[in-house]
Length: 84
Image 1 (cartoon, rainbow, N blue to C red):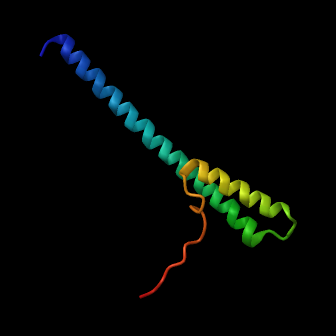
Image 2 (cartoon, rainbow, N blue to C red):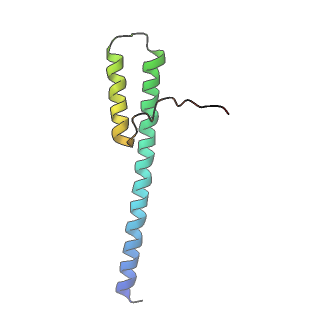
Image 3 (cartoon, rainbow, N blue to C red):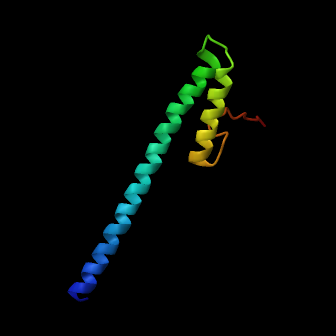
């Protein structure tokens, strides 16, 4: 392997490694955002004392943003489990 080939291989390896690291960082950022949005949505549903109409608008906005991030609008919704 010549020096030029070795440099090209090292550059390709480095670029692939950086792409994977960026992808993992983005996934971690999305997971953190989803956790915060889940806490906010839970607060709006269960803990908020003021039951005005803006609660539904906020939950719809959160669901829209989650759908934009993950492609699944119900990612933060409670999932029912069936036994047996």
